[in-house]
Image 1 (cartoon, rainbow, N blue to C red):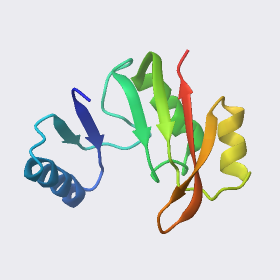
Image 2 (image 1 turned 180 degrees about the horizontal axis):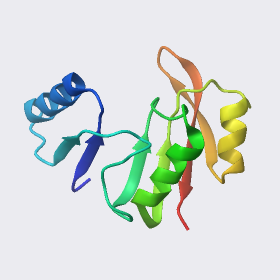
Image 3 (image 1 turned 120 degrees about the horizontal axis):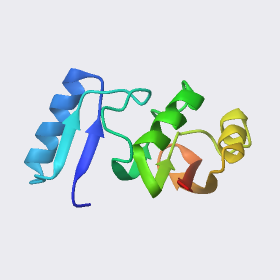
Image 4 (image 1 turned 45 degrees about the horizontal axis):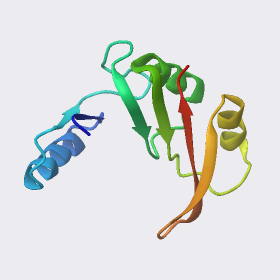
Length: 119
């Protein structure tokens, strides 16, 4: 990626991420304070938004905020860490228009990833 923005609400983790990026020689990674329900960027800011285990506490609010920040025809990719089953999180994401696939995550077994292209 040309530029990467990481959103992290915990100060110690922001510091760690900045130091790690610097140690690896990455000068295109910027770590900012924020939450998934209040992403500190303007409408249509990102080409791609990737979320990991952070997604799922306030799904409607989180998805609305992700859709706000992603450009039209941009992509939202989620790896929420849910097990490989058709539980409530899976059903909700599919109902919102996400495609999905399963993959083997070392130490966790089979899990699912989800993606959608913003209209």
